[in-house]
Length: 633
Figure (cartoon, rainbow, N blue to C red):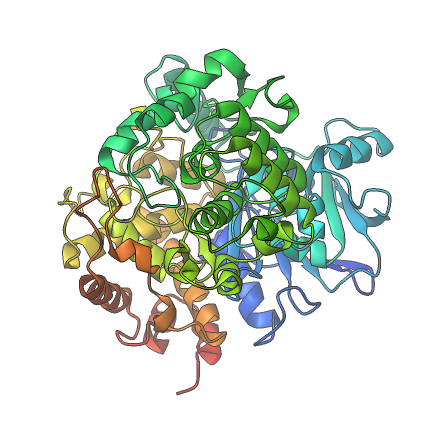
């Protein structure tokens, strides 16, 4: 008997409107767990080399994991993956909410979507059954209108939806897939892939119980975490304020991206954008993902200067920083309105904010003229102009909307002049809101990341645990196993690379099971959860190898698609200091970073010059089948 999974994957061909069920064996689930590994296997085996990310040959994979749907904190997540329209390489993003758990309760471990529908459709999955339904009446509608309509016509308010808004339909390069109205698989443009297939939503309802090997143990651990959270012993800051508390401390360290990563002075603005400041004014409460006691999702509502709908939740840290400080905007209501629009249109708040920030800096420099930005006074700090720009992105209006709707590399090339030097991106994907000039191991993580600049599988804290008061999780695998001690921020030597690798593999493994980074389970507890759920004799080492397998396969896919070591670099601005603030004497040494990247390759068992995984490494990771997809010498 299989515990915590069903041995059933749903395959949907939109071109010929066929639906089938595949039944992988237990070895498939143990080797992959879910998430990134499942996505990488589908993309390598089934998507041809050079396929158009927005064409019929690309495949969109919805991949929960073996822990998704367990009734305990942090086990609500699923991954979504495809060849990325943003980077042209491996694309994957993760989201929480209730959709992944509902899919597992409906009897399926994942969904593979292929082909292109001739007209808009949505997929309706319910207790082992699946069917395609017309979505012509939903096309062009926001995520809220779409979800409300689907629930009404299927007569069930408990239906969970993974869906897109107009941003996905209009193929915005960084469009995302929403689980509900405020849980976003935000990065790498998965919403654009979904839109290109004319798939508006996947609606799911399930009533099947998810069987586990040791129900009593799962119940005990769930109760223990819930009691610790409610007592304020664990995740206290996250439980009360969510992400984005005390941003003034981040200004002091230089870690709050400000005015397109140019500046370091945002003290009063940071205080106004901190959760503790604005939540008592516009906050309506906190929500949580399926079965999670932490409940870190902010709900906000406002009437002026913008009307903000609480149905779309509230801004997380990445949103507050990208649409706030990165754009020089310190009005929490304006940022909340922009967050609402991003969720309504299904566009990534990070990509939206950083693209707008680049346009703002180019406008202030005179590189972009008023007629280039639709007459907006697109200066840093103008919240009204920022909100108007978000609306234009979501609708992909001619002019500014079209300019902002592309990846940062393309946008900078279209602008010309100095734009490429100050476009904060890796492989086309915008920087998240964590400063690699402060978190030096993160500089390595951004450079080598197969998905472009991404904080969800790279080192957050330069090998140093900052504590839960800043919304960060407990020490990771390397600290818990005693593998490495905290290290100096200034170094970029082998010890920093080693820290980067261990944190990267730890977090990537959590994108496979998947588990939430914000719930402070220890490594030992994660092992206990896995054993109780599956009945497997899993070890911490095995979980690390799951992450290594996923990261390596993603790198194989990129190498196959022609993404080389030349792409594993940071933008020019990262090699210099900020204009002021803590990092005004900072800047990453270009040669040291290059050495660190090559050391990273070697430590991972990849070719030290090219960064391509070796056949020996693939054999070691039990994915010998992937050797044939390595570039031919």
